Length: 430
Image 1 (cartoon, rainbow, N blue to C red):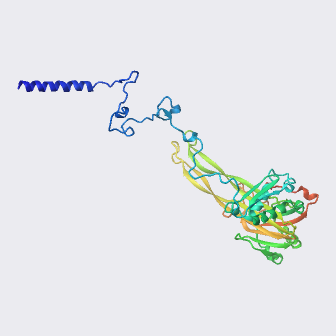
Image 2 (cartoon, rainbow, N blue to C red; image 1 turned 180 degrees about the horizontal axis):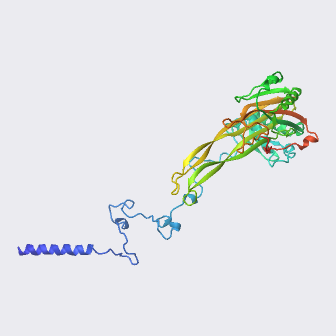
Image 3 (cartoon, helix red, strand yellow; image 1 turned 90 degrees about the vertical axis):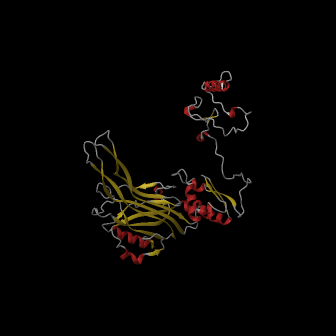
């Protein structure tokens, strides 16, 4: 019995000694190592049965590392890579340098056209060659340059470079010839933009009009002999509702574009934001909506001088009315305070078509009863046009006359020249 008791006491003393050792703070067995350093099986490669990548050691990335600038995370003592500061992203798609030659499986050929006879005589725009690019795209379409076969279209102030099939090169050559020919150098076109409050002029002029197909719904077009066009215009000018929105002497050079426009900004209250730091407790937010009209005219004469090609683009935006909306903007002083914002009720008209007709005739395009903008001060943008009732928006029959003026004379040299559309604004006329 005494022996068993002594054995139990020895075991108890052994457990007590072990507990004392386990409760002490761990120390490093390497000189200079900081206290409280974690030690694990991964630190000792000789320990078997461990996976260095799967042991439960703390993460090595710390956001508070003093070596990391601006609190950036570090991984393994190195700064984590910033995607914004990396070099070029490695592409996912397979990329090759090609064969070093332009593919021509469809028989494409390279051509360089000298366009300096046209670009040197146009001094009103920095890039007169853009007009040639625009007309080539009108003639060929956009898709043929962005699909099969491989194609290139490039231009500078002296050279027009094209890589395409021989058939497409013939189309491009015809367009370039129409710009650089001596016949086109002095040819001008007259443009008149007219509005009438009622379309009943058609009843008397029907016998003079030769219909022309138009794709846009609500729009009509006709051809007239020059003598008949002069008679019709004289009759329209005697009407009290006749208004002309372009200069009677506005002329456009062949191949160039002119824009007749009249626009204005109309300010309104779009929203109200609560502001407790200022009176009356909210801040109205204003915005501006543009209303008015813009008509772009781009003519081009054929090489033989007998046919006119013209692209006409018309855009009209009208604010029919401002729809009021009442908002609650309560404050401590005025808990039932309200304010009003506005929502514009807009009317839009868009027209963009191309016409071709003999040079000895006049083209007349009737846009239909389209919107006419009216400013917020109650004054019509069209002088003399009666103001409508507040419940209705003004409408008018918009007419466009296009006539070939032939060669340039001394008086016609004062015509507006705009290789790229440069707006000719007639303020107060529309």
